[in-house]
Length: 177
Image 1 (cartoon, helix red, strand yellow):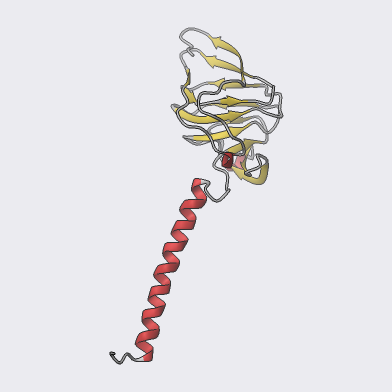
Image 2 (cartoon, rainbow, N blue to C red; image 1 turned 180 degrees about the vertical axis):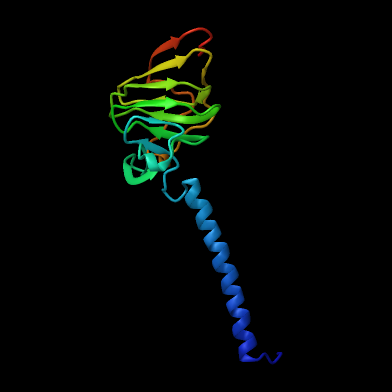
């Protein structure tokens, strides 16, 4: 067996531990942001809100796996994210081409969803209340769900479930569903 100095051995162990810690930290960040650790991947409205709202506007919060606001301000829903109506609010879809996997309106009487930019929604789920939608002239709402939403968004939703979709108002020429 080779004779290794204690300092060299200690240095090799420290470098190995650093690499392991870096790898573990990176994996934890990746899992956390994916929602795999129970951290929700969606947001919940706390006021009337818009997709382009920044966290400083305090109209959105991060959402817990139980579907409630955790008190941490968040920006509006991102592409391939989901959101929950946290009260009787009006939400404005004002980000062009935004893809929302699901919208949850359970437990609220939502005032409405205003489509002011072309938007895709995968599912709209409810516990009984319906979401009225108004589509601005020249804009469209596309209903196209390809992926189910897991409970880490605060709720479960199968793909292409529109049981929460209420009345649709076409707001002028070329508004489309």
